[in-house]
Length: 110
Image 1 (cartoon, rainbow, N blue to C red):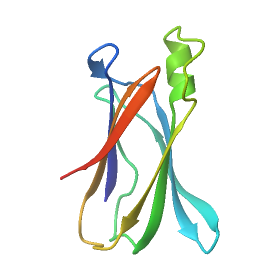
Image 2 (spheres, rainbow, N blue to C red):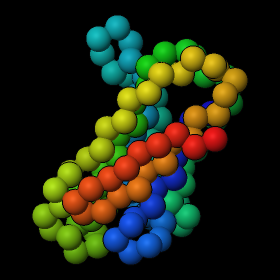
Image 3 (spheres, one colour):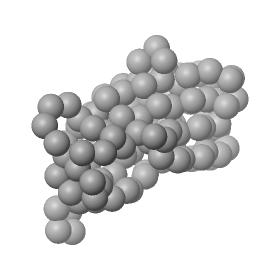
Image 4 (cartoon, rainbow, N blue to C red):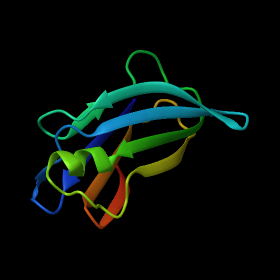
């Protein structure tokens, strides 16, 4: 399962309404396989059902759109792209994003 949680450090709360796209790498191309918007707690489950396929995945977070909705017209980073490798298909991949208009941190949570 691939999930994410987005927190906004500039307000000390969950980042509600962030659009996130999940892609899987197929040779040299990225194929979209999931999409969603963070809920009231800043969370999304992007895969459901059976086990994941091993491979390289990428999450793209539209943080410019999120910041615009909150009146920040000139954030430095318009999007965050995070690529990661799924080796253990039974594992849970929970990617945390902590953002502000001028920086971000990403890490895998258990």
